[in-house]
Length: 444
Picture 1 (cartoon, rainbow, N blue to C red):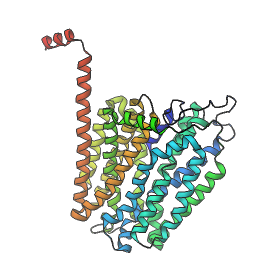
Picture 2: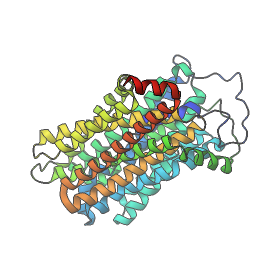
Picture 3: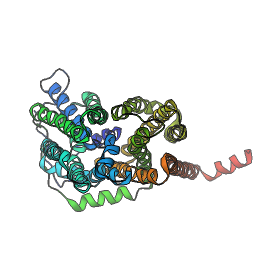
Picture 4: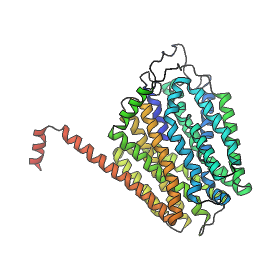
């Protein structure tokens, strides 16, 4: 996920609310069930368990991204075809996150997380032995679909089992696991591939995920505040339709998808550019490029301060400007300039993603878990589209074509934000009484 992601935290707000449209009824949690907090038994185990789950999930999800040049060579396929090993996983996750989050309401958060990790890890052990590109893509799609059960279930589990005062810290550790898993998986595959080949690299990620899944299984405390509800697909469908008919939510979903299109395109293709002339970097060094993700951690944390100072749309304008500047800088033939461009792209993306995802829960007045799940779906669909289209563009016109695709997506974010600004101004004018507007006109 890149990390999955700052958007994940928005699921928490109403994840356990009795009014969830996914259920028809839910018994109240036992009053005696104590919630976890620092210093109490189980809190540290729970924190390490979810951290391990986050590492496993995102190491697996993006395990092939740093290996795409090697996969292209091994199977004799183009960058566009190889990119489907990433896009299939993120696309399947996008399509399955909403239904699997709904199933967790019926069968339990812990059970859903355990099943998701188990299936994803088992598939991960088969991935290195894929005999063809078609088999590799199919296995990756199954893996992505399995992983879809983890993010929303983890957020709901935390909301139900952790005291509110300790919730932010618990979420932060899970999101940190996401980020570290996404980054370390790419770095690990890069160096192992340089020494022993890309299949060994995927096997190494699989073994890392196995270790994390085992740790999760033995550490995660049993849920004490979950009571199952009955699924109500019609009510869920009505809630989803309501969200999709909300123009502001739709704009936020589109912004998240477009930001991720840029990010997916850049990081899917950058490996191809860096192994070619004039850079000719070895696979291990290319994998280490993903250390730039740490910049995203800083910019995500700064997003709240940016919104407080510039407003939501002002923060988005700054984010897209930073992203666009990074794209243009990456056109340079200087490695230092390319790395600086990646830093700007990463900082702009994470800031924009944080602003858009946090705005979803603030905008949705009901069914916030489903509103956030829809955002995650759009986000990962953007990742899938960006990875594939970016690779196709690179194959057709080189890095400049990939940058052009990114700039087009950035232009889409700017257009949507400008339209939102115009709508907001019109709404404010409509709220001002007519005599006051006339007085303002005379004063001008």
